[in-house]
Length: 112
Length: 113
Image (cartoon, rainbow over all chains, first blue to last red; front, top):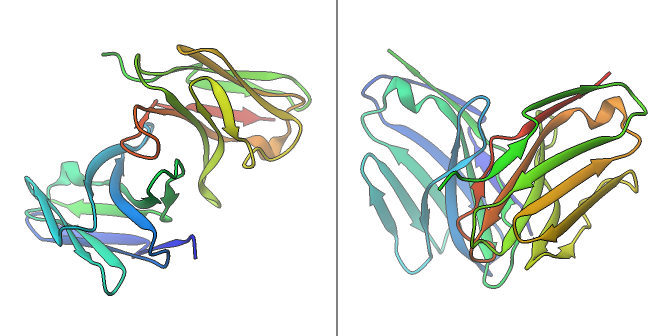
């Protein structure tokens, strides 16, 4: 029940296309859903996050869509660029719970 | 703000040797986390400190691993004795709110031969 399942494991998208990464969770106590971006040789960096009181959050080309009833959330990258090539992790945590539960990661490659 | 600072960036050591990894969290952050990342197991939380006090060390794999946070600006992760299976990238992260908005360091790549 503590797991966060992320898919796909890897993704190749043409430049200018839309990249979509999906995550699903079981624990209904989760109330914070961040996405992290990790480049080779660097630590994960917070990209965007959402709470379950909204269904969508947009920051530039990055959008989180959240479906509370289905217990799913996804990251959409519009107009994908080669510089977006990285590994993306979804995560979740519950109120007053310090521990982020991490997805397994998606390696995204944007082809020029 | 220099971010979370980890040292060394790379460490190669022989099996059986002691290894000490260091972390300086962001000033004002009161939560500190040590993570290990491998291809096989992904990101694993090793230990969590809040206000310099270890709150949860259930992720520390064995007694060979120990962590300290003597003050708000410094933490160490020690492995003694080291083994080849400890080879991984070790990350330190800090946060000003429990569970929210972690900032990670650039990591220490440890290779035990």
